[in-house]
Image (cartoon, rainbow, N blue to C red):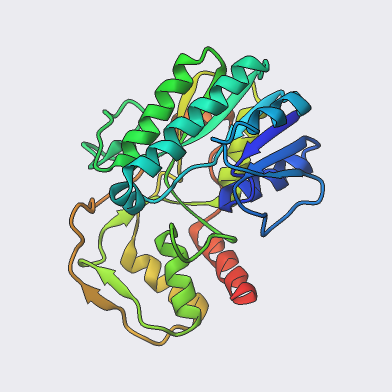
Length: 299
């Protein structure tokens, strides 16, 4: 298969590209930046999806499928600049969908977010949970989902939990795992907001990439699926585990709880298991150890 990965130079995208190529696929990447983890077997185009020249990539390569991962991924940026958020997450996605329709792409896999569940009404959250919005980011991701559903193209929509792992940038749009690890390996002070007993569902990037690949190569279609471990981990527990792997010697500074932060989040992954025959396999301890080793080598 010939597959386009938008955002393929990024954190999740680069792992997905590596897995697709290992599985024998021909892979083309469109990304706004140069690839820091380039796979020499892939073809890379540096451009914005809103650039009209993106159409030339579709015309040249004739894709069987598209994995659309390119996005504005920061809730804070969406609040500060909702126009940019809509351009990157809605308009760019619509352009990709229209190019898929025009050029006969058979399947599209897209990345959405657990942010659509806002403050959960029950746990673990399944795909039938009502959607709700606490940020423009959540609105833009939901809008993208609806355009995909209306496209008439076979599709899989993934709602990711908290993805972590090697290659995650500890700055900008980073998650708590990469932020903690960078500070801990440098033995710098860090903050935990609130009592630290808030919980999240942390899923390893290698497992996320595996699900992206399975979705594009499988018969599963027209599904919205959670990507998660179905396990809750507190921020205090996360701090303790990373501290063990980094020999961190400082106690965390306790900061006030952040306005709008939800207390608990965990996603039910049973539907993904039924549709794709796979759920994330990497234990948190193993994933954190791999991520710490990567950060020690890199930073």
